[in-house]
Length: 309
Length: 258
Image (cartoon, rainbow over all chains, first blue to last red; front, side):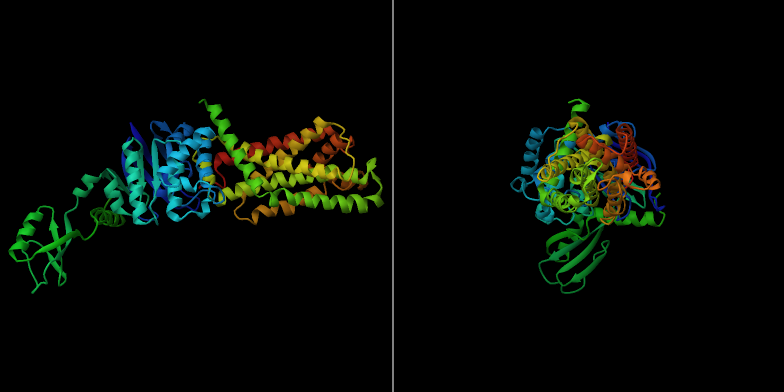
């Protein structure tokens, strides 16, 4: 069974702006799914419709087999949402925000406090439970929204840019936390502008642009589409003269740094043999650009130019 | 857990949250109406009232007590819901409710319940203060309580509708200033409509607050300018109409969904 199925979803706002122009999407149960797209592509509108925050113009949404139009309460029971913007009461204590959210799902106060303690401890917020939420740091506010979204134990967790503005240490701990709950069976849909985040966490991916899905596949299959990768090599010794390697487009960035493009049918071993043969010793190597980022830019540009429909 | 047990927990959650909200800021929510009404009792009841004499068969201070209590109830029930619901829209935490499996009637019930609770708390406090100025011999406890609560429900509903349509903090003060206050002051709080020329008596009958003030005055003092049966029917009709309208606004997502 799919965790989420969307068919021919349309949304036209009262201003006349068409945010979604027939979106079809399927997210398998248990998946860690990335929904990517540039700003204004329609990601938040699609999430808003799935979570009953935005009225759709046409199309259907089914969550774990429950139709949003006919069984909206069952759909809502299945979903937890971590929105892009902070949307909790700034004058309410942290613990009460989580407990009240549980109450809206019919969870008794005693049970709600138990669950709140569990998730607030996991997200390192339990010590702040009596603090007014407005006094939390940005990273803590993001974690509070995750704790709130999980208190009713949803089967589908939707995270709309959950790590925006969060420092790298907290971001990594959030990644670990999300990976753990995904392993425990929660399906996760993630939107993010950090493409390395999507690449390292997600198994399947959809890219949306101008209200349409322009790519929908597994992460592995998508990354296979890369025709070449560009690597940056840091060298041990200074280059005495400009080098040329047949078959590998090379650019010298400075005396100790080379940029080399390797196509899909070439091997890195061959490259290193060629470099060794020329007396070049490589200290370290990294991708010039995140692989997904490169593909993302190509796909979005292609869809803008009408190349992908 | 069955569906209705779940709804009960959700209702209690919203109601408790609302009560905590106005209790935390009691200096802004409970104290001001008590001070204002005390001033009315001192100035209009004691100082000016002694020179006015009787009105509607009772002393002037006794005559204005029901209206002043009800005025506090009306203002506070309305203000609680309009400010709380608009604030939840403004800070977007209304989304916590919209994404949850809470039916619209439970959301409405929770917010109205919060408004009614504040109205009742303020009303009881003002009634206690009024007893410092006059001996209240309540004519009909059951009727008094019923009108007290129904009026509170009616204006809590009105506050909810105002909050749904409001787009700024200015919008939540427009109705109280330009509609609610004139209707209350012209609703027979300080005078009997028998004092007005016939034509203005007829115009006054279009004011719904007049029916509530008189129905409440009947409960407290046993006197009324209006037939109390008519007053009760009008209050109930308003409540039914406003409830239906509020639920339809929630169903369509007016002011809360794109």
